Length: 79
Image (cartoon, rainbow, N blue to C red; front, side, top):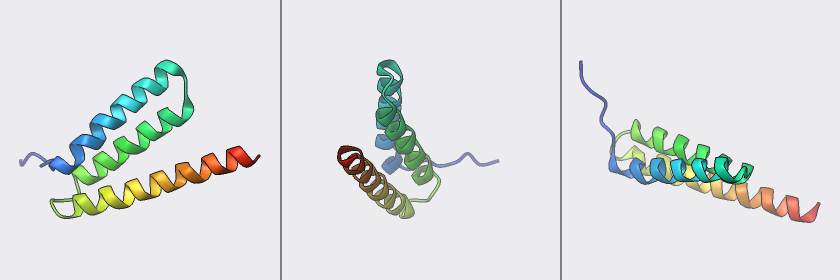
């Protein structure tokens, strides 16, 4: 039985996601908590994607996450 191989591209997102989840939970801030959960999901997705695809998953995931958060902030400011 082979153990899964994790790729170094996923480690920063797992760490940053854990930090944001912790900060969001302590301060009871939903945006920080949500960002942390998304970063952990990106880290897990890239961990199992393979050596080349890990960077692709990370790049696309971060782009979608940051554009989505920016759009939500713009909508919140205008309402």
